[in-house]
Image (tube, rainbow, N blue to C red; front, side, top):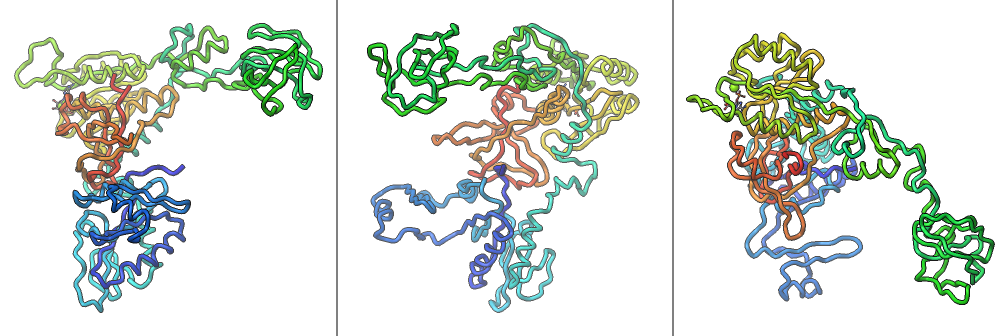
Length: 585
Ligand code: AMP
Ligand code: MG
């Protein structure tokens, strides 16, 4: 399936007029589509351009005052929008394209917009290179040699320009390649998540519980159906049952009536029918049902006013679920439909996984538990309460170890015990550079824990590893960073420990404001998403994005994710959002 990508590759072409930009694009487009790329072109035009011929009907209707006109035929359609308020920003225009059907957007014009560009140069024109911001310039296509810091492409060789574009599309972004000039230990969000999930194995503890206590639990083994559902062929309508080999006979003698829950011992012969109710088992000889509204009953006989088809209006035995088929796959979290389904198969109890046990503690000499009077320079420990709620919301049990003081011997003994008793150990604080090393030393002694720097904001520092066999996460101390990291890394890990493959749910929304980001980094902003009058999702940020501000997370209903390959989001542009509904409590 084609993924809807909010960061579809864009390449602009910059040139002085007379360079032959359109002629080049006219040759480049078939070259690229011939290589399997699906293209859109966004072209800037003179302010007075028109698609309509003056005098055509659509032109007349627009001139009559329609501010938007859709012209459609079986081959193509166009959406003409009058913009008396001025030109729409590039992002808003791009959002109108159907990205599911595209691999690349070529842009002509829009020379001041910050998009990657190829500049064109023709010597005979006697002009300098067109002006392009250095950070946007991908390459120069020229008909003469030039001294450049970017690749030089032959202006008159369309295939070579297409080769360059193809290679550009295939090249991993800086973040995907995982390298960074500063440190090879930088990981992208995806890379970190992949490494974490690879290191985990589902936990095996099971218990059997009465059905009524299974809500939110995880099914330990696939539940198969012991019976056919429905158990017998039955009528899908209130009507008349008859034999489908017998459709031409015109009228049928009524032999009786069958009600739901009351199997009948009738044996129908040709020319005979029964009155039958919805859900009633078909008597012997009946394989077709005609609805009551299409029947006329008269003097012990019935005839029909609509054409008949053999087998119509019958639910076959095992049609929903055949005996032996999997009704609920292993590792499913049991909700209302699964509990009802299990009951409908006659199961009074289910074997489920015991809840995951997660040991949770905070670190840092500056953090104090609420209820104590605050020492100078100290803050209250909010993370333990936020994280506790997130863990419980995910269906796991919390073993609260409190706030661990900066004391290595104590840290070691608590960690060792937690690792022995729990399925996962989770801490916050103390993993960024500049923190006292006692937690590092303790972790190093007890197992193998890596200290990563993730290409994301907030939440750059993250520790992950094993204490013995037990996975350990050290989240950043920053309250919002701790939540974002929990959602990106710990929540998928909790699902994996229960045998499920889970990823944050992502939707696409239109940005209502520009959003800044540094290329190469995943940016998570707190967002408020809502539907516009067309039912389309649109999103704005909650305002200042300081990573300690929990109140802004409380106002958010989604996280906005700006991908490493996105240089920033323009108003109107498409952006990923992760709905938070159901995750935070
Ligand atoms: P750290 O990751 O330990 O360098 O902490 C980063 C920031 O988060 C600092 O301002 C800490 O004071 C704050 N912080 C650390 N732990 C907690 C906590 N449990 N609750 C609230 N804030 C914390
Ligand atoms: Mg600290």
